[in-house]
Length: 459
Image 1 (cartoon, rainbow, N blue to C red):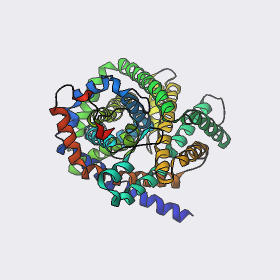
Image 2: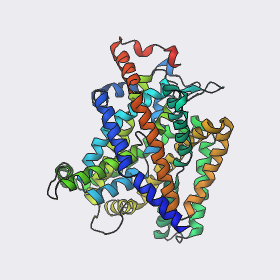
Image 3: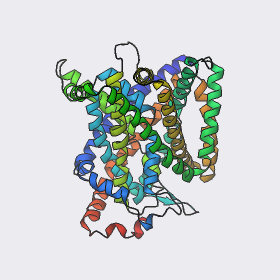
Image 4: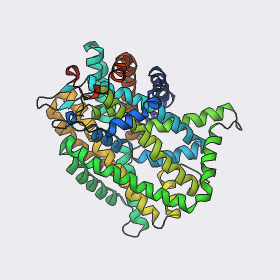
């Protein structure tokens, strides 16, 4: 059994290393250039599209574009925005943050293509609810002969969206906090109890379907991001004289050649890879959510979709980086992630370790809400709509197991499925890039009333 676990871990580490980096970052850079740097040139249009409130977008059968965006952000703004940034800083230094920013810009163009294609190639359930995702994009956009690729994505999606790491790390963080506060000993029984509590909370939300998930995300995401911003602002205010040096180190270390070109490339890869794994650009899950939007205009959905990486890999990760560079202790040896962040906030803010644990709890739970929907749509594509209910139940119960059991092999399996989601998604985005460009040119070449019209072909 140990040999199987070791083999699985080795395969996952290999596939999720440079191959996944090349596919997500390399493919995203290609789309960025092919689209004419859409994530830079069209950012004002994206912000304007988000502010628009059109009557044609009334979410009678779907959700609004803003709700879709917040639901996607609810999934991506999670443990990675705190633990992932800490890992990037520990491994690559301040310069890694610069490359996280670059990766976010590249990821925005990938998300733009996902959003456009999600509306162009979605389907409608018998009750009128819109559904979609890479499975539908592949079969509708590339043809039925490509269906095996869609099946691979759906199978990988069912398992890759299980919140193995989130459930396990959240249980560990809560158990550690309870132990340090003298409320309970960090034991297997405590983690099992926390897993049951997680399952009850997540189940009460996801059982209500996409509209309840979107409603909760609409409230939870602004609250947790705002609260996190206030905590970071406190740390910045307390160390204001050091802030210019922090940003100077990010830019200077990003291009430092003191250790040679190999070290520079290593820093860039660490930062870019962390950002790619945080914002999910190119993995395909975002298009599952954006396909449920009541919006009938593909390009406007794409513009709104590309704001996701700007929020998570841009804004939230920058908040974490600034706080950790001001208050973090990087002299310790061994793996540094969530524990480094909790320790830094604890030193910088009164009761900061408990406040950050509360924020981490919100981050982790919000990810679970949305990922349960992603997995249920993959199950529905493979086995029919009724199977989505059974998947949701299995997803909820699995949180108890993941919270209490050592998960080295399971985490490796999750990472492996994560990569298997990205490969078909990026391939379909690249192959269908011309249809995205055509839709983009039509959208921006028409008069100002274009966005108010309903295109029957995408209804």
